Amino acid sequence: MAETGRETVRRLEQAILELLRRRAPGASICPSDAARAAYHGDDDGWRALMEPARLAARQLVDEGEVEITQRGRPVDPGRTRGPIRIRRAR
Image 1 (cartoon, rainbow, N blue to C red):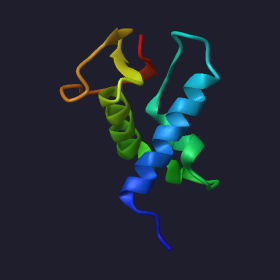
Image 2: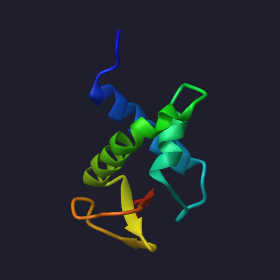
Image 3: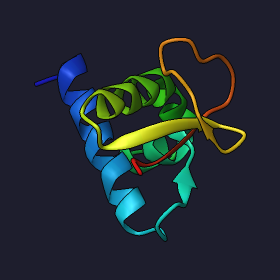
Image 4: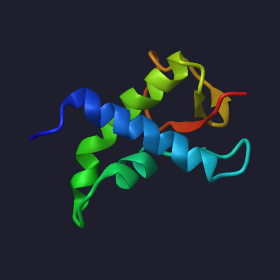
């Protein structure tokens, strides 16, 4: 059975939280780290998970779990363009 979009986002949320648990407090990850961690293949298929990874990060912001940053500063996830980083909420 094919995975739904919601299941994909949930899997990416879990990947984000697990990656952050393994890092020092204050450390951040790139959405691509979560996409790669959640992808189960040997090719570049993880790239298709980039937008769902960003969505998963935004949902985790709404839940108070993480912050999305640019240049080390928290940003509004709904207004962000360009590269982002994800870190645990402070």
